[in-house]
Structure formats: C-alpha cells, structure tokens
Image (tube, rainbow, N blue to C red; front, side, top):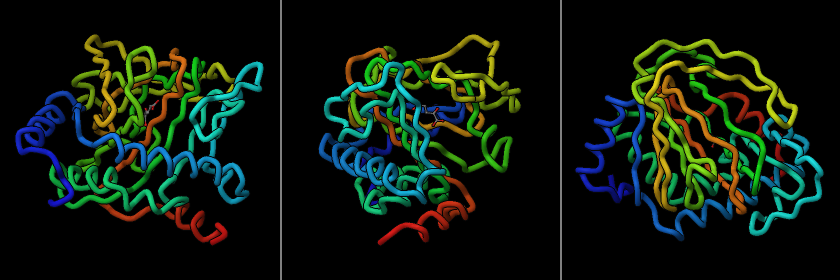
Length: 260
Ligand code: AKG
C-alpha cells in the first residue's frame, strides 16, 4: 500500500515474530514530525475530553499523590494527575485518522492480517515519576469477544523514546499460544481497581524503542508496562485492529453527543 513506508523485509520479519512470539518490534516506522503531529492531537484530545461531560465515561484519571505537579510539555493535560487514559481518542479527534501514523499502522495491519479496520483506540499518558504500573494482562481478557481472535492486532505507538525505566512494553514471548489466563482484581497504587494476570512462565522481553518505532501484539499475548520512573511524561497511543470493522456503539454514541 502507498501508506506503508516499510521494506518487504521488515514486514516479513514482523509477520514471523508475531507468529512465533505473539509480538513484534518495528523500529523506525515513522519520522519525528509524524509522531509529533499525533502528540499534538492527543494532547488536545485529553484537554477536550476533560472539558466534555459526554467524554467522562471514556476518560480515566489517576490522581497524583500530593497533587499540584506541573508537567513540562504535556499540553498541561497531565497537570496534577499521575496517569491519564482516554478511550476512543480518534473518535473525539477524527484528525487522528488522517495522520501518517494512523495510515501507516492501518497499512501494516492489513499487510499482516488482511481486511481489518480500527475496532478501538486508546491513550495512556504516564506522568513523570508516576506510580501507576500497567499490570500483566492479555487484552482479550477485557474484550467482549474474550479468547483468541484471528486477524486481531494491537499497535502500541510511543510518542517519545521509551526505556525500561520510563515504561516501555514488556511481552511474554509465546504466551499468545496459550489460553486466556485468570486475571484477578487488584487495587492499583492510585487506589483504582485493575485486573492482573500472574504469569508463571519465564521469557519476558522488554522492548525499549527510539521515537518512531512501534510494537505490535496479539490479543492473547501477555504484556505489561512499568511505572514511568523518568523525569519526562511517557505517552503512548494504542490502536486495535480487528476483522469486524467499524467502531463500537459506545464510540458512535460519544461522537453523537459531542458539540461540533
Ligand atoms: C495496552 O494497551 O494493552 C497496554 O498494555 C499499554 C500499556 C501502557 O502503555 O502502559
């Protein structure tokens, strides 16, 4: 596809990693300006969501202990918050769907999985020195369809360099071949409830990435991300592609409720 600025070797390598490990790392997928454009739109989406009563069910904010913390360069969306999550960001700010990043991810998803389209997208912003880790989980445990699902692919797009210290993705290689594991309820450090899987198998692989790189995983691949121990925000956009196509009803309702 014209939107895929990725060599054939890189596509084949991602396909074989996905089959074998349940995840793939694709470095240098996008340029700095292409990622910056997404960051600008997501900063705006978070500010817009905070102001919109209709968006509240899609916005999760984890309070920062002690509050009142100013975050440099986050469009102020993170001010006072330990972590922000926004579901259906691309529905709130449809310009995200016109970005080179979205087009490139969609083209790669179709090369790897056939006729798929965006089924969900969300944003996770971890503030500097944050306390909210993303626990081990399989995305399938949270989906309506639970279990494995052919042609379902989840793209994780960091908006800056990521290291183990700042909360890059860590995957359990091969876990996608196993069953959906039990997720138990946990209380996260911010006091919010979460769900955690406790993998017992060795073989977790952390994936630090320079800006412009992405990771992909399947819905049954166990993964986690740590707290952001760095002094800068750690921002990521996650796009899920699936076979049924179209966004869910909730997203349509959200779009309908928003002022134009
Ligand atoms: C997910 O989207 O399923 C993740 O685990 C993202 C983790 C993160 O960005 O902290």
